[in-house]
Image 1 (cartoon, one colour):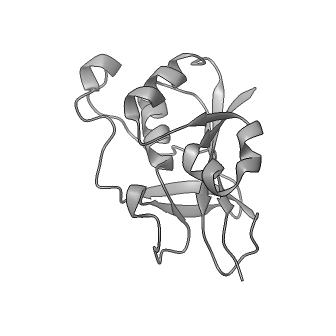
Image 2 (cartoon, helix red, strand yellow):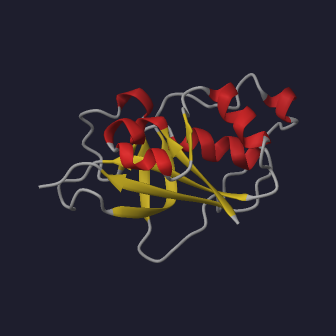
Length: 146
């Protein structure tokens, strides 16, 4: 069974997600590590927000890959504690037909012009891979549309 994680950033824009899983602030790397340690034997599904005028609000997209444009790597300074030197992110997400590539922007999310931007989704995914989670799935919820 997959544990559902919802970014705090998504719950601010869509409070209905408060009830859908564990709310996590992915910009707080140490908190992410501690939460992930509590259920290491399960897979995870991460929900974050996106905005796209091309799609209706509430549309949910499957993430097949991400580009980390946050300017940060959540593993820097934590390699020893996580017992990892290098984390291979090849095939990071459970892929699905029609999945999208998201640009993780961190605090630069508001006003971005990327097709499927997200906030800190990649932080959770990168840390989960470093902690040897088996299956990592991700979803984006559109909070903007025409």
